[in-house]
Length: 204
Length: 285
Ligand SMILES: C[S@@+](CC[C@H](N)C(=O)[O-])C[C@H]1O[C@@H](n2cnc3c(N)ncnc32)[C@H](O)[C@@H]1O
Image (cartoon, rainbow over all chains, first blue to last red; front, side, top):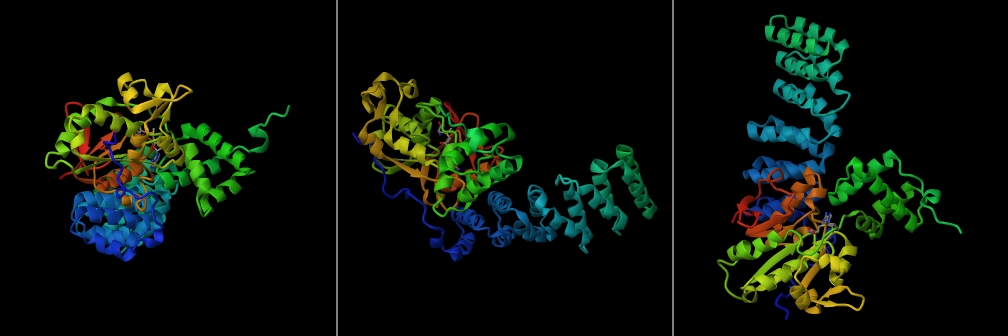
């Protein structure tokens, strides 16, 4: 009767202790040409919280599906540990990678907000714009005040404009004055005045 | 007579403790309890605390988190999982297996080669046994191949029951009497038990699908049944489960999900395959 035989080799009953996994092999497997080997290595790296290793590999990973897997893994690792190396990738020239990184950071929750906030001091105005654009996805009560600081201080009009957009969504009525001050600071940039008027109308 | 009452000895679970528990359990299992499950979760935590003699949540939770052999955590997992299942659930997929999937899987195989099927999660065993019954009854080439069925679940208690293969008549109501007669014996108390040979031919193992350390032993499957599990996960865990299944499959292998589940929002790893009997997913060859 036993038409269906159990295999003795297919699956071991209990996983082996973590110590038997060769961590160096993970880094090596990430470079493998075989997709299956790479994906398994990504998942193991995530299990060990190897955010830096994964992020380094992210820039080199050409397969879009595996990129997705990498990003999932980084969300799972989460927190500052995963956010820092990801933020470092924002400066990449690869727009699709950058967008993926932004989406990933946005899904990571409030605990990474301080890391995003730190980018508001970055020399590169593009990075400051990315940081401001990300603010809205963090449902933190601190977001309006962070945006307010930007419009009061940032020397770059596009960064301020991004922050005005944030305030249009989550600003409070008492912030209207600061918005108008920002418009005055860049009085030679009519588009900002326009955005400020629209924002003030929404929250005022 | 003193009636033992939970409320006397076990304090209620505070909101903060609930959130802490939920996050921890989610990280461990991928299962996300929504707020509307609060009552269910509280009751089960309290009953675990009571049976272990814990007086407050903190004491209990410390044990769950830090006990080195993980016994308390396993008991908790067993208590929290929803194991509902029955024989021939979503039979159209079994039909699809024999009429469309397997014929494609074996197209380039020779007689005597091995076909590997994974029932994950298998709960109390109804699913893997249904697969076995169905193959034996409805697949004309069943004798030509060496078929391995591996059945896994995170819950050790359901696995124990699965190995025992003992069911009330309600569980087998959709299986024909003839089939039951062939592959099950009736016990003295009117239950049905899967015959020994068949029970021994299925390999039952414990695994946590979202743990990359545990599932690295599962490789080379031709078909994975992953039904009615993803519904308990949030998007992130679903994606991780999809990745685990992907690595477990051979190129060209198939995944069958539950009828209310779909990969489309989860993962672009798989291709959609529309067969006359069912829609399934395939790992690109
Ligand atoms: C509703 S049953 C599904 C059984 C069967 N596949 C069916 O469709 O009837 C869900 C099972 O998933 C198992 N489970 C939950 N989380 C799991 C995880 N992370 N890994 C493996 N199994 C898990 C539970 O223990 C439970 O037995």
